[in-house]
Each structure stands twice: as structure tokens, then as C-alpha cells.
Length: 402
Image 1 (cartoon, helix red, strand yellow):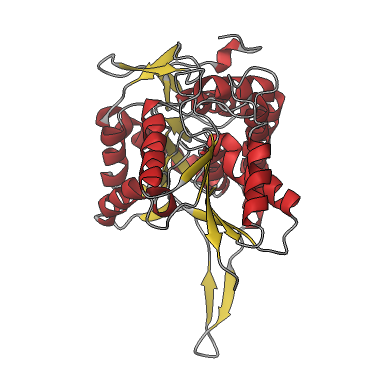
Image 2 (cartoon, helix red, strand yellow):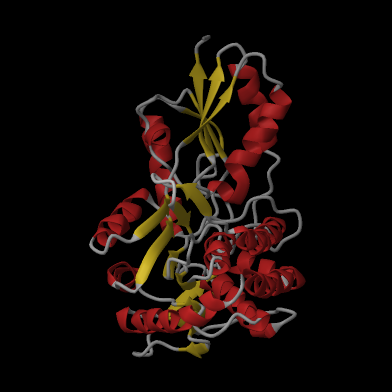
């Protein structure tokens, strides 16, 4: 892998400041979704290694918590600066393992770094309150303290931003963290961990455990030393994690799936509406939980909007994210392609029509044509379910006047 700084490409997990392999020596191969080539491998760790990471985070907690907010902010600011300094390498690494166009990946690195910058400053403003008491000679004082060891489980669609959005506030508040990144995109997480070490984040404060989602996740949810879990991913897995965390009454933050609508009224500027639809739907090949899955268009402009959208979609350039001019990369894997095909087939069976795309791209592999479906019934899967990510496809539904 060609990077300006080859040390950013790490193939070991980070526990207590040390780069480690799995105890049993097992690994998980990571491939480039654009061509199927093996990029490298990471340790397939389990409960024992996760427990070691949690213990390390717990030991590091008192010293990290004892630093002043300004001292922690200075270290986090170093981390932010290093991310921006290595933006090109981090973006290239992300495109290789996740597939998104290089320009999008570079934008995500900037976006990811901004969370660290923001929360480094917000950490200085963690104020308490003084509240009048129920008796004249008493006052109630409210102080805010770090909750303790935190855990984060992050997805493959935004492999840098979803990490910093969790780690930034946790570390700024004086907490320590154990991170489990998605197995499809672990190298972005490990590169950020390398930069965290260089920034001066002490050993044990930020740990990255790669491996079995079930084994690692079970330890994170069942270990009483972990006081909060933050998860971004599917609703199904989020529900399971919440149930597992209930035993110890852990605090839980969940960012789960979506099925967002995009609404176009008769008086809309259709050119701007099309521009907005493209940005909302086809970013990251539609692999975002906040992308527009359903486009509701008032019938007065329905045909014109569909035509303009088709023209715009036909100009999108599909290919390897490292190639110049590419606007849509591959889907993350074969399962993603299969899900898109399933949802499109279901819509067609129920009366929808394909006006653009609708099948695998001629490049093969994980590439899929940007697709527009019209006359989509409300009972179709694309109307009711998240075709998630794995779905560069727009479903346009006609909306009667209100």
C-alpha cells in the first residue's frame, strides 16, 4: 500500500499503547471492494483481548481524568492537527478499504477531524450548577464528572468520522475508550490510533480492538467496568446491544437505521431539488443511514422531476474511488449488492418501473448502476425498509395535492 507515511498502515490492534496480535494468531482479511484485492489483515480478537483493553482503559482512567480540561484539550488539538497533516494518506486508506471516491474520503477526514477540534474546546466548558435549596441555609451543587470507561462500536460506511464523533467527547470529558471498528474497514481506525499515540494520548486511554463482532461486543456489554456504550449501525443489532447493556444498567447511545423521505412540492425549484436529491441519495453510493430512500414528488411536477433526475443520474461516473472523476464507488460487499437486487426485484413485482439502471454495473464485482424507480407502491420493500447503502437507487413516489 503506497502511503506517504507507511507507519499509518497498521495491521495489529492497539491495547494499552502496544500493537498486538490476537492471542490465537487468527486474522481477518480486509479487501478492496473495488477490485477484491486483499489489502492486508487484522487480528481476530475475542473476549480475552477485549477484557485486557477494558482493564487497560480502567487503569488509565484516574490519570487521564485528573488532567485539567485544558491539558486534555491540548492533546486532542495535537490529534486534530495530525489528522489534517495526514489527510491525503488517511483519505487514500479509506478509499482503498471502503470504496468511496477519494474526494469524498478526503472530505470525511476533514469532517472527522472537526469533531476532535470541537470537543477539545467544549471540554473546557463542562460547567456545573448551583441550585437554590428547599431551606434558606442550603444550596444544591451539581458537578459533572467523567462516567468512566466507555466503549464504541462503529460502522464501515464512515470509518473515520463515526470514530471521532464518539472518541472526541469521551476523551475531552476525561473518559477512556475501547473501540471496536467494523471488520470491513479497520485500517482507518488503526491509522487514527497511530496518530493518537503521536499526539500524546497516554497508553490505555484509547484502545482499538479488531475481531469477532459477537465476542468483542459481548464483552463490551457485559463487563461492569464499561459504564457507557455508543453504537452506530443497524436497528436489529442496536436492539440486541441495548438488551445486553440493561443487566448493568449501562448508559447507551444508539444511532440506528433510517428510511428518510425527500419531498418535492409543485412550487419547488426543480433544478435545486434534483441537486439536493443527488447529494442526499448518492453520497457514498447511498450507503448512509440519513440518505433519502423515498422521494415523494407532487403530481404536478412528477414527470418533469423524474426526467431531470434521470438526466442528472445518467451523468454520474461509476468506478474505482481512486480514479479521477469518479463520483460513485462500489458497494461494500456482495451481500450489499444482493440486497439492492432483492429490493429492486420486489418493487418491480409490485408494479414499479425502472427508468434508469436497475442492475449490476458492467464493471462487475460490487459495482451497481445508479437506479431510479418510479410508480413505486407503498408496500414495496424500498418504500418500507432501509435498502441501506447498498443501494444507489432512488424510489420516486407520486404525491397528490395537499
